[in-house]
Image 1 (cartoon, helix red, strand yellow):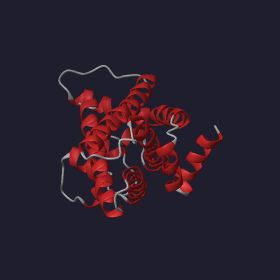
Image 2 (tube, one colour; image 1 turned 45 degrees about the vertical axis):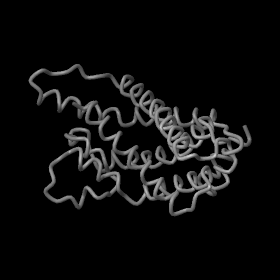
Image 3 (spheres, helix red, strand yellow; image 1 turned 90 degrees about the vertical axis):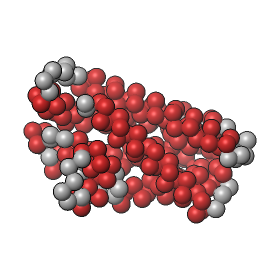
Image 4 (cartoon, helix red, strand yellow; image 1 turned 135 degrees about the vertical axis):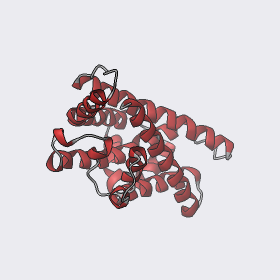
Length: 222
């Protein structure tokens, strides 16, 4: 338990130490529990805004859909977060075998790394959720982009009306540089490649995650 706590502390203050430990001792259960609690709680915090989005879509639709309860939204957020960690870990494990990464780095090591880096993303999302009630009322939310408060490239998009593209651009902001930085450290330590190659891989992983999240959001709100 002490080492698990230390991993979470070092994830913020000294991520290199965290991933060096995880590479040789992939403890992920405690971080996973924290991640699940955060995902469930954040799902609840944003649920009123999510339901407002679904209500707006339902009003516009010729065949109105049933609006899920707050608890349902929280459960969906939790299931999505957990499922995505598993899927991403599988993809990265397959990639590690294809590119002949050290076979000592197995699925359990990669999964531990994914869970810990996902906590960084959760903390960034937590900032957005904290700002959301300050800058938006529930009645003002009409599209998914209305729930994105942290300034991103979407505010420079001008006349672009494609909601999915705007949602993708909203993820390009200064706090996500932190996420990519931590991903770069994780990839570098796990694979032993140079920081430049690790940064390239980290950006690909980040783009994959954001792209799939945008697609999931579009499907959920359709």
